[in-house]
Amino acid sequence: MHGLLYFCILYQSMKKKSGFEQFFTGRKTGSALKEQIKQEKRQWKKEKEVAIEKRKQQKREGAIPRENIVKAAPAIVRKAEENMPLNKYIAHSGVCSRRDAVDLIKNGKVKVNGTAVTEPGHKIVPTDSVIVNGKKVAPVKGLVYILLNKPKDFITTTDDPQKRKTVLDLISHATKERVYPVGRLDRNTSGVLLLTNDGELAQKLTHPSNEIKKVYAVTLDKPLEKKHFDSILKGVELEDGVVNVDVLAYTDAQDKTHIGVELHTGRNRIVRRIFEHLGYDVKALDRVMFGGLTKKNVERGKWRFLNEREVRELKFFGKGKK
Image 1 (cartoon, rainbow, N blue to C red):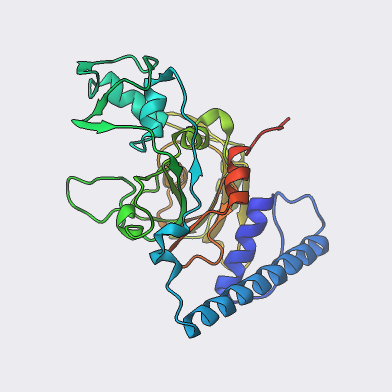
Image 2 (tube, rainbow, N blue to C red; image 1 turned 120 degrees about the vertical axis):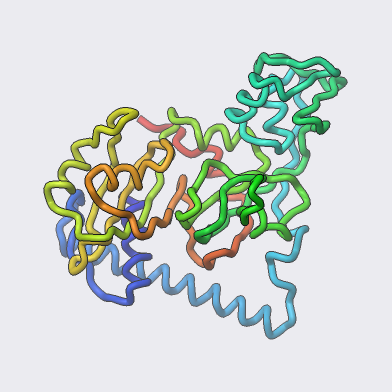
């Protein structure tokens, strides 16, 4: 419920409207829910004012914009590990996630000491030489974590053969370390995107078993009908199986083209596919939360480094779940 509460606060403040009627799936009474939203909105507004004032102060003092200070990245030193599996070694080298590394290995694009290796679990020792796509790689020592508020028209990839704009273009001054996006947002989807060179964390956040929650703001071409609202809550049968959402809500009582969706599945283009399957055209799709991370105080197209607390919470996200 936390994720959807944040979504509604953010959405309503953007729309500059007061009041919020009700969540269809909420457990609290309407008055209690309104009061909670009111209190959280007040707290969010206060934090925003503090951030704005801090930015103004830095500008008055002639401070260098944060995004241009490379050394500001909270780097965490990784210890050397003996007999590391090849896919993990590649991920720790900042090439890609461990899951993507498995594909590179099986496709014969990795060589160890000059010989092609196709077994992801092949053990690597410190004296081995590992070549990926013709380039020698080695585990990075400094781990970097960047939260980007992705705008539309940028590709979520580290390289595009068609030379289109990628998310790496937006963080080109952030760090000298080689980072890559965790998961994907399609070209026309905006919102929270994490970029890092921590392959172990990327593996955790993208693995289906960890059920990492995401919250999306959806704008449809026409109001979502009650029967379709109910169908989505029951589960929608797509070509690759049934998809279930955790929470669904109309976020504007006066305009039912605006929908809030909370889910944990990581299937490709899943939110768009749900609504398209029911005959709707998704006009806008924005991810407002990913694994507890939000884009609060990060303008569209801008980024910031995660702090130590956020990194720690991501690493332990989902632990202790019943």
